[in-house]
Image 1 (spheres, rainbow, N blue to C red):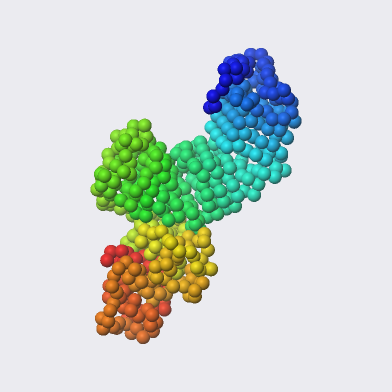
Image 2 (cartoon, helix red, strand yellow):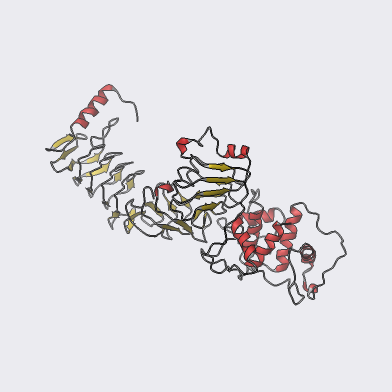
Length: 529
């Protein structure tokens, strides 16, 4: 709060005192020479005059923290509502805005804990930051159909074309909320205090999610991200960035008692694992190097954190003299360093096409647990579907822990917002892949077995292995003569190192495609060398 002169303070105090603790009789005052107000014996605040209804410069609103105002009506000539004008009016239930209000200021209705709903008028063109924060009883925000700046659907507030989700009413009760596919941006605190959402679906259209205190969504069990998202991803209802380098949020009502953080994760965001109800054990891989403020705080059932790194690495990750303190809510938790995950979770039941007795079960489990190959949907991995050139180089890139890239994208058919963009650029930069031409990669084409073998061979050479140098060993597959000249040595190396094998009929099928399950098996074998 800004410092004020003594005279300003006295003037403000007189205005505040004009509103009695109990509105037993009408009281009145003025906000400016043009705007006056009256509160009747029933708590109805009437604002009359013209221009902006706002506190005078350097002074607090005369209505701030008023416990008696139950409703508000405005003269049609009122054009704006100032910052924090009705902040803390805890008895306020209804608001009738002037039809000519063009602006609502920052925190204008913040903390109005009894406000049930509001209709934004046709003229409104500007809505301030957190205008409805702390409105814990708010069930709907509706917008006049003629408003050109905002719109609403089922009481949820958006901008005019629904590309921006501005505010979800705190008291709105839904078992599941699907963010519309038109939404590109979810604003800061859009879901603050929303304690009645059971699950949330975020489509691939969303490219930006503002700061969200996810732990306020106390009944949220899962966050699911569309497979086509290039920015975000989810696993078992937990929210990550696309490459699973950052763990963004574990929902407070997350239904499991144990959390296994993928080995791709490098960072746990502030408040990411906070105020969960059932979580008892967290397994943190050594790959995690950064944990934000309150990353593990106030988990009601948590008893143990297992960290694969050393005591010294844990001290850097979560220092005792910093935010690892009683103030952060991390108390009575046993921290186990130098720990290994002995019993890893089974493939989740939601992958309905991965039976436990399938030959590829362990391979697919490896691919999913490490995050190198995602499922096609939340319920299907599709093991028998052919893998594409883009998907395979992405898996190799993830296996290499997604290093930084230093060159520009030269392929015209690889969009800069494609999930595989960095992987393709990295692969090209390091000689692991070639395009079909200097400017085309054909990312959606199915990769042949000889192309895949070539990619693997170039990758291990990139890693420092010498490769084959005149070994004199040949391939005895009956179709070995059909292997392209460029791929013969790579196929031979992969065969000798038991990365890629032949089929029961004695063939290697170099021009055949590779299924997603086969790719998982090949990558697990490569990783275990």
